[in-house]
Length: 272
Image (cartoon, one colour):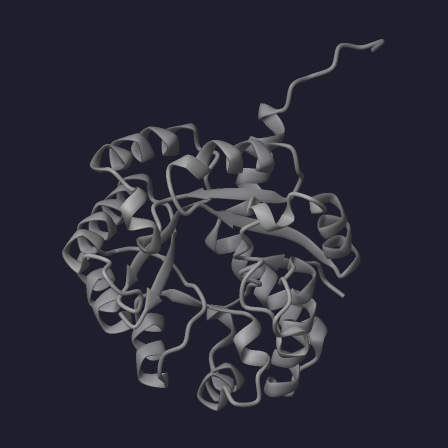
């Protein structure tokens, strides 16, 4: 089986503090060889960077999540610009719009979203997009701000909305929700979509698969998402694994970032 990449996992979340090493070992045993860890606010950037620097195959994305709007300050966007300068980030994110959570100022969300897209364009970085009950506006904003590339994580829209994203060159991040029988629209899209726009994700510790509802999600369960998608597409698991891993490596330029990460590691003098 080709190695898998979890394109969206909040590995820094406090839910993993007690057993993070065990979670990582389980993921490796399930064939997950790479992970992208997106940030949610400025306070998380230092924590995520340190975590990713300590783990091979684990890469950070820095951004300002719309659900954490009350924690953001205008100066955070300027700080984000500096954080992106050292080239450790493989993407800008998690960013976007959330019109589901009550009392989150829509105009302020839009401001943070557009400013982060500008940073991504300036640095030619992909974006990791959150779009809950806001997919139409998110897509229009991406089109206006382009050219851009990236992934709409936890995609839950229609086929027509997916097609508009593919036209822009955007990927769909697919995780636990596809394993639920009731998710018929999503399962149909995943069964028929061009595989070059498909990424696997866990969104752990959130969005557990159907067989683990109510439990903490883990990156190891990306292998179950793979199995479900392969069944829906009537394809071999190896084929889907190879394609989705290639997609993630290409989108996030992981080979180059792995080299940069290796170059940043401290050298140990001979004899020590």
